[in-house]
Image (cartoon, rainbow, N blue to C red; front, side, top):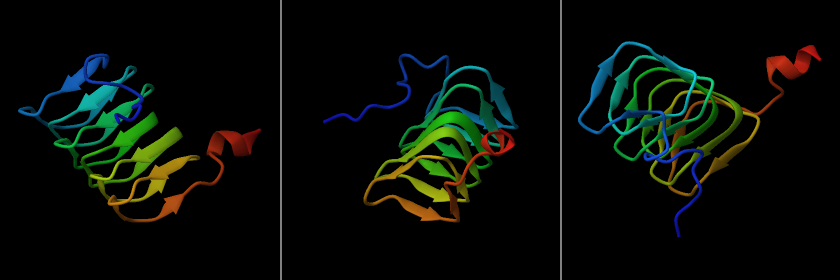
Length: 121
């Protein structure tokens, strides 16, 4: 059974395909799907999905983050993070909600505390 993802490749505003490698930071206001490699930080006001062949060598910041591939860097999610069974994460995860499937590998700290925005209220 297919699981619901924040975004799908056919609905993402930006797609980094499997044969694409980006060196440098990536910033957007929209949803991003990554099947290729990004060597740099990825930031968006939308959602990020890292496909099984996707790899990010840098930090990730988004509203919702779904990881099926690899991230070597810290994750900062405003709403939620989902780590599928094929996920490999080497970095800290800061997310108010976190779902981790059996088989996912995480090496880092997990912080599910209140966000800085909530603390200011």
